[in-house]
Length: 113
Image 1: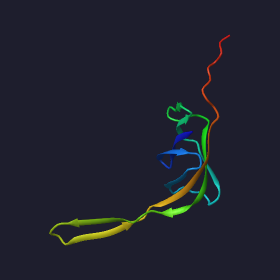
Image 2: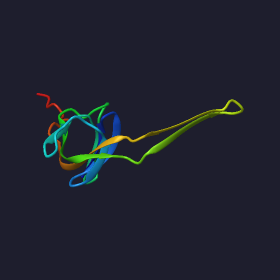
Image 3: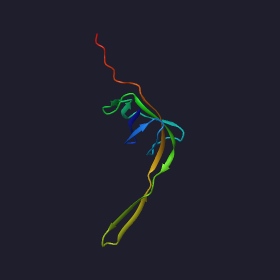
Image 4: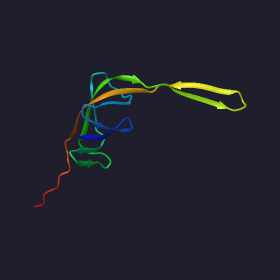
């Protein structure tokens, strides 16, 4: 079983017990967080696609910690002007472990009387 979920504006394909590095989210280490923007769920070949989200579906994850990415060097230069600027940037990330994927409300056909 896997799902495609929107976390902090980016889409991730997740499965149960998977470790994931996502852009920093406001949460405490050891706490659980839930994401309800589930775009797709696949369970044993049965694929449910949301329009744009699947209503009632949730992905539950545990916050393992916070990390920083590799340094990215930004270098600006204008030729023949003597203008050179060197800068760096490190992105903050949150490490998550996916605990469960649930799709409680599946679409059911209405029975006609």
